[in-house]
Image (cartoon, rainbow, N blue to C red; front, top):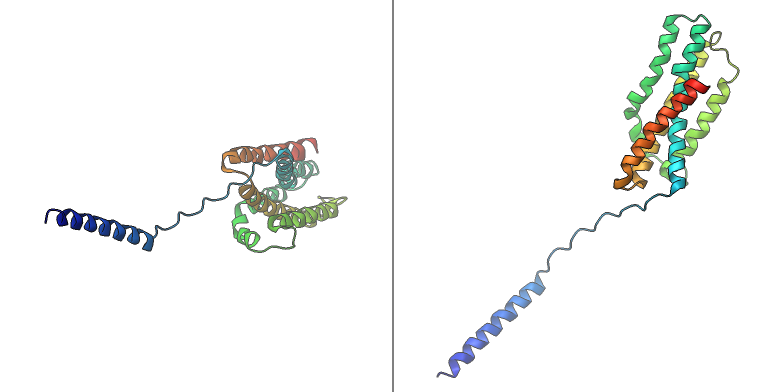
Amino acid sequence: MTSSAPQSAASTAVAASSTAVSASIATPSPPSPPSPATPATPGASFWWLLGSLYVSQYLGIAFFVVALVAILRGGGASLDQISLIYLLGMAGALKFLWAPLVDRFSITRFGHYRSWLILLQSALIVVLLSMAGRDPLQEFWVVYALCLVVSTLGMTQDIAVDALACRTVPEDRRGLANGLQAAGGLISFMLGGGLV
C-alpha cells in the first residue's frame, strides 16, 4: 500500500504536467507586432536637395511680396493693386484644400512625390519664363494671374517636399529638416526680395 501511493502521486503529477504542456502547445501566444521600419539616415546629397527644394518653392513668392511691390510702388501703381500682391500668400494658408490630392494621386512611375516634384518644378520654370519681359504696370492683371499660378505651384511643391521629408528622414533628424525648411524660406526672401 505504501508503494502504490507514491506511484499514484507521481503518475498524477506527470499527467498534470503533460496536460499543461499540451495546453500551452494548443494555445500559442499571439505574435508580437512587427516593429516599424526605420528609414536609413540620408546622406549629404539628400540634405542639399531638400534645402534647394525649400529655397526654390519660396523664391517666387519672396520676389513678389518684396521686389515686385517695390517695382509697382516706384512705377506709381495704386495702393489697391499693391495690396493685392500680399493676397498671393493665401495659397499657403489654403493648401490644405488640395493636399489630399497630392497624397492620393501619383502622376508617373518615377515615385509618388518625386513625380509631383518633377512636374511642379517644370511648371514653375514655364510660368516664370512666360512672365519674363512683361511690364507689371502695363499688364498688371496678366502678371498678377501668373504670380497666383507661381504661388500655387510653390505651395503645392511644399506639400510634396514635406511629405517626402516625413517619409525619408528618421525621427531623430526631423528637427534638422525643419530647420532646413525655415532656413530655405529665409534664404528665398533674401535672394528673391533683396538680391533680385
